Amino acid sequence: MEEEVSGLKGKIKNLDSVVMAREKEAKMADAIAEATKKQSEDLLEYDCLQEDNQNVLIAGRTNETASYMLLCAVMLGIQFSVIL
Image 1 (spheres, rainbow, N blue to C red):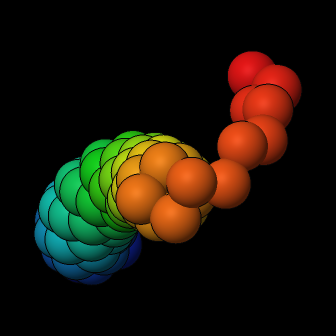
Image 2 (cartoon, rainbow, N blue to C red):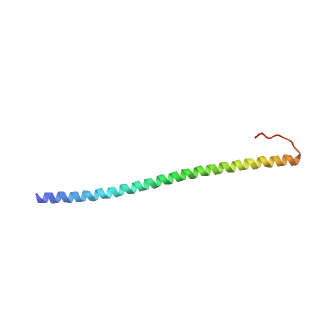
């Protein structure tokens, strides 16, 4: 009987070690998942900022083109109306 109890205590100890290792793995996986989520959010924000920047650049070029065309027209004495 004592041998059986001793054997069961050994198995419990072994299972405790396995559980602790699995808990450590689970915590590591959670940390990795959280870091990946944060990185994904940061990349999404970066993409939005890049898109906004591109839109600003395009709007700037459009305004520059319109201003250039107006200047050329004035220099050439061409009259036209601009609808804004």
